[in-house]
Image 1 (cartoon, rainbow, N blue to C red):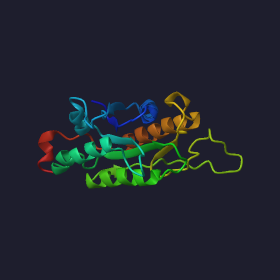
Image 2 (image 1 turned 90 degrees about the horizontal axis):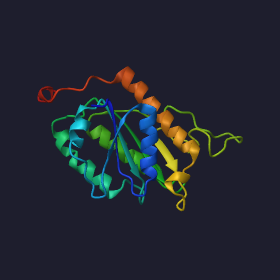
Image 3 (image 1 turned 135 degrees about the vertical axis):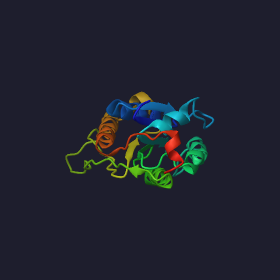
Length: 195
């Protein structure tokens, strides 16, 4: 099982492309939530065995997609046994607007992680906010609490801003470094009853 699992929903392929970049940077495993809000077979076992779970979703109407919300609600089963307690957590989101209320989505993902007793990893990146900064610079969207990317509404996933994709890779590297420093080994199911 992978130490890092990136569980995400993507409506049009943009969030999937970000998830792939996070996976490339972290060495993590992708776990897609399908169009009906379900995980593939064995998905819950992969999450329970991971040392870090990275949540990804587009921002729709200022929050997560309904498919991601269905997954989050279903996570009440591992919550009940505290299966994700003390795992590392991180999150990312994409929307068409530069702002688009993406912080509301990241706050939702953070709250979900805290409900599970997880330890949150932010971007650890300085913003690119000088006059000389360009849209292709690292962390141009300037998020600290999690990864934000912005894709114009008429752009395909292949037309995403290269700087955002590179930022996603660096975010993945940050998560992998955090796992190396802070993650506890995955607990056996039998240990969960005594946690």
